[in-house]
Image 1: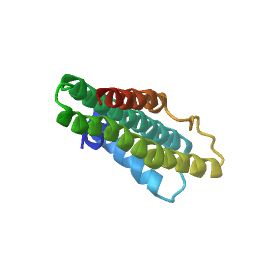
Image 2 (image 1 turned 120 degrees about the horizontal axis):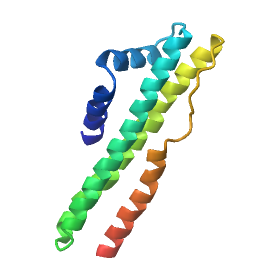
Image 3 (image 1 turned 90 degrees about the vertical axis):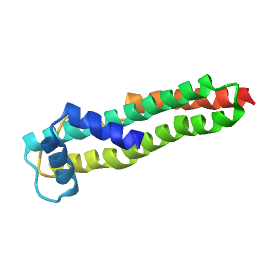
Length: 145
């Protein structure tokens, strides 16, 4: 709920509803894409991808804060740890296994029309930052036992 809701909220705060819907509709479509439209849709989906990863990191921080606030009660550490790890997991899952392939699909369709849109398909830096966060959460949990 936090990752999907946060991603949706912040994406719609950053882009218009019309542009987000158009980007997803175009990514799932099969029609030819003009150069300007392809670049605009890739920019929208790239920002949605980063926002989704950032929502996961934010959810993980909330879980870590809940976990650290309740270190005296071992029963409350588990649910807080679950929030910390699952928000990262869902964010990486959505950003890298759903949105990134859609960006690649748009790029491939644009390149097949002779257009070479500028966009990187590397793993986002926010997703890379999520890996140490997961390790920190794991070691805090391990240290609490």
